[in-house]
Length: 188
Image (cartoon, rainbow, N blue to C red):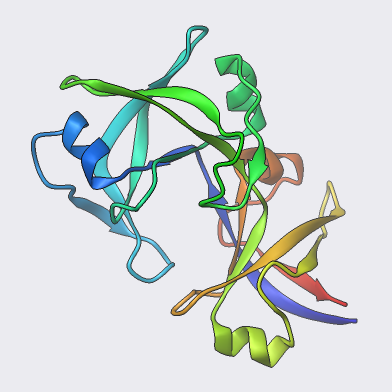
């Protein structure tokens, strides 16, 4: 068993959109608010409202660049407020994704795109080789502190990835984690 320090990023609710969906919702190009650690990705200035018949969240950030699929990532706390039960999925796996409406002042779309993102650790192929890890391999994260524990997560190997764990706000809050905290990644 090997342990290696890794930085934790906290992923709040957000939306990924296709070009077609974006054009249905906005009349201008997607603009960059801030770069993310994952190379080429950014938090956009543009936000949307996500809604169901039961409730809604406004000012939900779009993550760019535009993608080949629409995806809304929320926490279980968000899902309960919206009255839905989205599946836990790897980004891009929308099998069984819940129906959600994405809205702006220009218009709205309703798509089966809502998931709870699986816990994961981003790493480049070089880092994966160094750690003897393959894509989707089950790993663990040791969370020391006042509310400690060990959680399962999966390796997400992709070119130009920044070595970083992504947890949603529910996981971060449950273990009193702040964005940028360093924790031990356990590789068996």
